[in-house]
Image 1 (cartoon, rainbow, N blue to C red):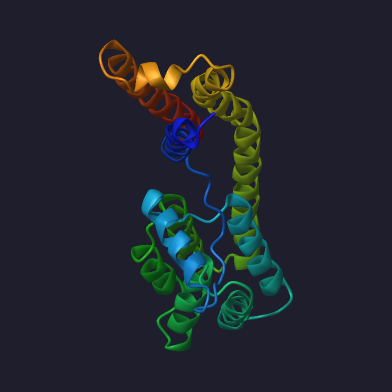
Image 2: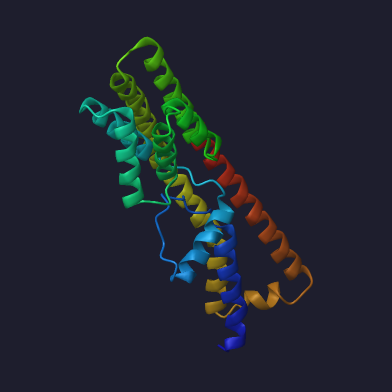
Length: 242
């Protein structure tokens, strides 16, 4: 079979895979060396598809556990946040939680207090879940200052709540894994059928790209395929939002 006959099939397959498949979940952002320009460009494209890089619930729960453990060990608020800021700057300086820890530590260093630092960090945070958690943590800090309640116990209770949310999030991801795979398979099935017909010599591309009813069917099929992929992706995303 000539290369000219295979070129449209390959182009159609690649375009459909890139456009119709749902975007991958954005994980924690890690530092990328400046020399890796290709990887930096790929990261920029990923951020265009998902503007808000939100920390995983497991990470926020771990941060609260670390904070509570530092307080229980006898560290002051300022020392605990300074330790957390140093830890996150060393391990993941571009992570949103690193910025939060640095902001709160700087606020305590200047004497503004943890609650004010958390409020400032929340005001610069784009992730809704993290912003809500920071407001709750600020409320816990203010409650401890006004009533004298042990801050470590209050933070530990907040950490347990975050861990419950992380467990629920993991269960949701497991539950939607099957529908996501089904969506991908159904997206690729029409492309596979066209490719199989081309291999068997039926030349479906000649009919689809030759104008007339074939091209009309191709256009309608791609439109319906895109609409179906968008609809199913929205339904799967709605499960996570709920």
